[in-house]
Image 1 (cartoon, rainbow, N blue to C red):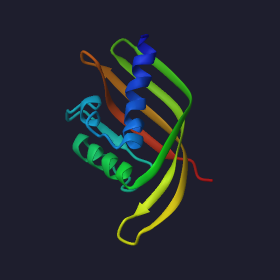
Image 2 (cartoon, rainbow, N blue to C red; image 1 turned 120 degrees about the horizontal axis):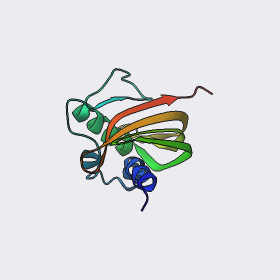
Image 3 (cartoon, one colour; image 1 turned 180 degrees about the horizontal axis):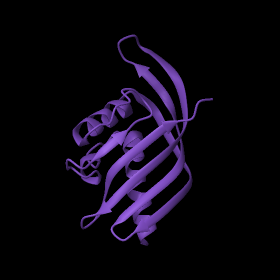
Image 4 (cartoon, rainbow, N blue to C red; image 1 turned 45 degrees about the vertical axis):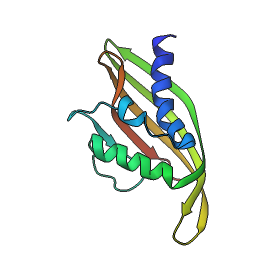
Length: 134
């Protein structure tokens, strides 16, 4: 497997956890370190640390049934032990309100940037997701 394929698989694992609802990999593919940070396309919009990011990812994916995603036009740039991945991203599914037993179809078009470092395997150290307003 090439280095670029390895990097893309790490990023896909984040979104695949939304499909499978298996969140065991999330803590392993993010760098559990004070240097980790993320911005999301969903509130709250502040800069988040490792723990908050993983918890919010799990909550997001739990609340979306029939989750699907599509990564478009990924650009992978590797600089030694650092990689930057920029892409377009579509996420869709059924946003479920379990208390009211209702659901709403969602489709989020956005852009995403992931920064990874190799220590000794690739780990996500920063995520920035931004929604494109339709």
